[in-house]
Length: 160
Image 1 (cartoon, rainbow, N blue to C red):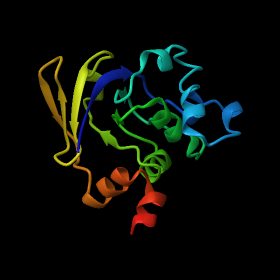
Image 2: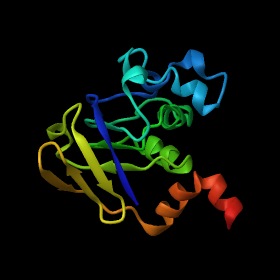
Image 3: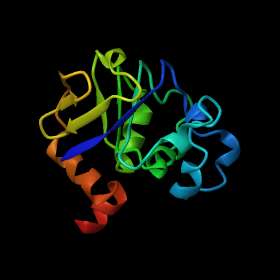
Image 4: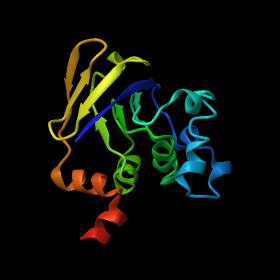
């Protein structure tokens, strides 16, 4: 599975309240949540993001409350995946559960907002087309690829 999009860079310790403020937790509708994604830390993010774009962040992305609303909001914006130096474990699990691929690379800080990225989930490769560099991540296991392709864990279970 190959994903391609423009990078939107965020820093370290982006918590779930930064991703989607608690006042919007009255719905799980991805489109509605997507309209408010990152509004407290990057008010123009949803205006700048286009379908397929990629969030890049530092360490501990998705820390804080254990809620699926955060990856649902990211997916609702149309972001195809998140690349970070590291993820909060519960965010990692919630992202996979809703079908949002996430990859860890120690060199995440080398990626810049606006860089065009191409991500090969099968090979675990992230190509920065703007900078002409390639980074290795752990390849997405086949079963996780199937969950993402199905649109999340519940959809995957229904198909099985």
